[in-house]
Image (cartoon, rainbow, N blue to C red; front, top):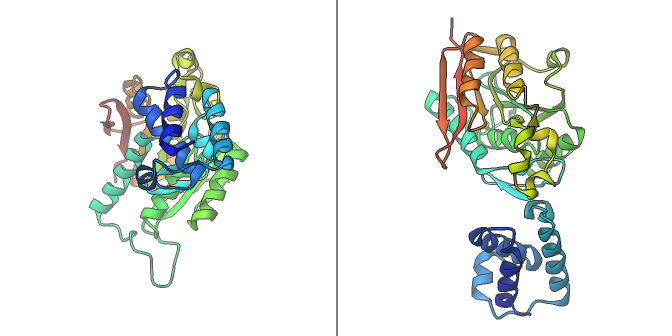
Length: 301
């Protein structure tokens, strides 16, 4: 089978569960993963014949895709803020809107003039200038992207799932990016005492009420970890209240909290932090025009 024929066949098979544009994107990813060719190489070599091994791998990929398994888990990799990460079903697949959250932090820190963007000649890894904690680290995508962008910042990540932490630590090792990932149940106030006091708290916590599960795509519901996605219907803001309470004790004066949020729960999140005494609260829309991020800054006095 030629590459052009394989691409057409994949798109036709996937059109029953994915939109046309997404089917086309996935088809290219499958071919890249099966052949080792880049997207440009695929375009320039459409008449190239697939080997028997490549065809078998392609058929295996498509079979798993038709079972709604995400392509990122099949390839065991995903891209986030310029990083290639290992991912499996123990962690959420990094999303573009989470990249927007990271970019907001990086741009804010640049605007404030923090000296954290250049690696020190002595390869020093610790600075008193900026300390960051990622709550619910998952694959480590947020923490690792921030540390990569700001090498002289100190960055921690915590997660309740030891399997997720194994993925995050693997990514840190593979990328040679030093982040301290800790096993912490953040909802347990006693365990929070093991976490540092920081300048920035960032989190993409679970925020989808269980009752929305029936409206979601099978590739998410059937394959991504539910503990990283869902919260009780009657307590959807549980993680935001916990973060607000933690920040009262462990966020430096003048520090900021950056959070990803449910598009329909922005008012509730804002209310949580207002009730904790915060007045500097900014909600930001993502590229799709949805309320997706919030920044809360504590007062200096």
